[in-house]
Length: 298
Image: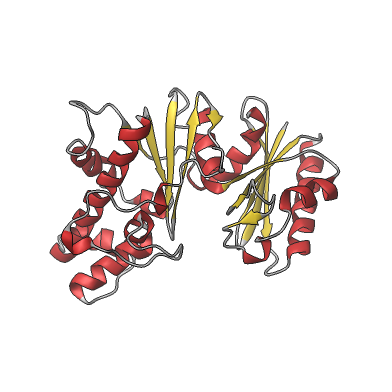
C-alpha cells in the first residue's frame, strides 16, 4: 500500500492507494495555521487514521508547497511560511520513525498524471500548474527529473520569451526580477493585464465567462494570455520536446486554452511540425496527493 499526503495552506489531505492505483482510503483535515510542530503532528495523526482505515501500513510520500534545498536540507519557497527554513524531511522521519519521500506540489502533480493519469502512455511529460503562481515538473519514463539544484521544471521564473515592446521590462516578480513568466501567466497576472487595458477588475472565472458570451475586452485579454502561454510553452518544447504538456491549476479550467494555444505555438517551435499535445489532467486537484503516493516509484 502507498500513502500520499498533500500539505496545503488550508488543508492536509491523505490518500492510500493499492499497488495498482486503486483508492483504499482518503481523509482530509484543516492545516494548523502558523504552527510548525502542530502541522507535523497533524500529518502523523492523519497517516495513523489512514492506516487504521485501510487495515495495513504503507510507504509514505509527502507533497509540499516549496522544495527541500540541496544546500541546507531545509524547506524553501513554501506559502505555508511556518514551514520555510525547517528540516521538514528529517523532522517528519524522526516523528514517524519511518522512511519517507518528499517532493513539491508540481512534481507530485506531473508524477501522478504520468503514472496512471492522462499521460500514462507518454514517455516525456511536462506538467504545469498555473493558479496564483506557476509551477511545473518533468517526468521521463515515469521517473521524476529533479536536477542538481532541485529546480527542474521551474519555468515560471524565466523571462517571458519573444516579448513585445509594450511587455518590457515587465511586472516586478516576488523573486526580485521583472517580466517573469509567472507575472504574466498566473491568475493574478491575467487579472492585472485586463485591469491595465480596461481599468476594471474581474477575476479569471468572470473573464472567461464574459469572453464566452461575447465581451470583446475580455476576449482580447484572453487572446493576449493565450499568445503569452503559447510562447512560453514553445520555449519548453524547444528545449525538452515533450510528448505531452498537462495543464493543471485554476487556469487549466479555461477550456479554450487547449484548442487555441497549440494553434499558436507552432509559430515559435523550431520545427516544421509540433506533435506535442496540450491536455487537462485526469485527476485534477487530486493529482498532488496521488503523486505523493507514487513517489516511492522513484
